[in-house]
Length: 357
Ligand SMILES: Cc1cc2nc3c(=O)[nH]c(=O)nc-3n(C[C@H](O)[C@H](O)[C@H](O)COP(=O)(O)O)c2cc1C
Image 1 (cartoon, rainbow, N blue to C red):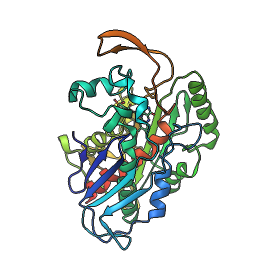
Image 2 (cartoon, helix red, strand yellow; image 1 turned 180 degrees about the horizontal axis):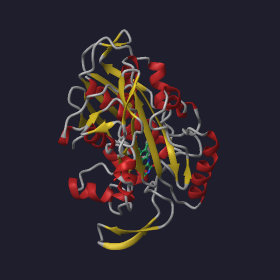
Image 3 (cartoon, rainbow, N blue to C red; image 1 turned 90 degrees about the vertical axis):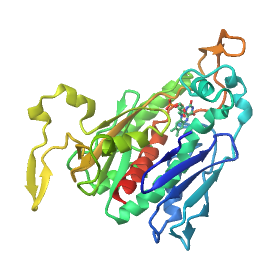
């Protein structure tokens, strides 16, 4: 399995959803960096399950235990290892999916790949649970980035058909980036939160699920970072973002909408502002040729509707090789978009810190 990413800062995730613990190793962190554990805990709480009727009823405290890498509250240069215990696992819920794979989850392809030896309980190593240690790594990276003047934030731009406003592509401020994290539903425009909640409750009431879009922006990213062809910042971000299970697409700047716009409108004219070269618009989302331009970095990810739904679905009994139906067992999020918001911030933090180092 490849659950490692990064060049200068190498991040490796381990564990399974219904095993004893999940965890992370970060290798290459600069020494002497303070890690504010209270700030890290509040970051992890934004992702943690059991936060009310909008998420899975599985309750996990998500308290990281640091085995190495910290001394006196600061990074000490040794690999940082943090473990989060799984305290509310219920592996018996997943006996059935070993032979009757859940539609659109990883059960069937994992079985093909690992020949039945995979841990099928709750998605095993493929589970959204692995984003808990991902957020530990991201939370640490974000704290280091902030001290280097790089601020980032994400919000739920869309849940089902309910939409939030977008970050202003050129005028986004550090205040805008910090705002969604202060809200119960991570949106910029509080007035849109209720419509999002309604979408989630309506889907859940029918035993269904709903997807959406998360938008992320970063300010203060130095210009000139990244490499061409396969080493671009889009490549690095996309590769890491798809480590968040349930993602279906990534777009930078104006993204797919650029395909329907003429060059004269899509081009971002260069200007001088306080002796600095800037662009008047930001269709490029802060990256050209794979290299940062110094404009706000802006990207969006599409999140699929949770595949484990209560409704009856068609599947195949792999032991009997017969078609059958399944009511997916276990406890599931009717919508993962809200929990993906801090995960996207975490990935952006890891990739940006790795690239800056
Ligand atoms: C925070 C988080 C929570 C998730 N919770 C669930 C869940 O409760 N039920 C489910 O079926 N999928 C859930 N997922 C998505 C699955 O993990 C994902 O769809 C599955 O591993 C297959 O991967 P893929 O969708 O990227 O192909 C969650 C994902 C994240 C990031």
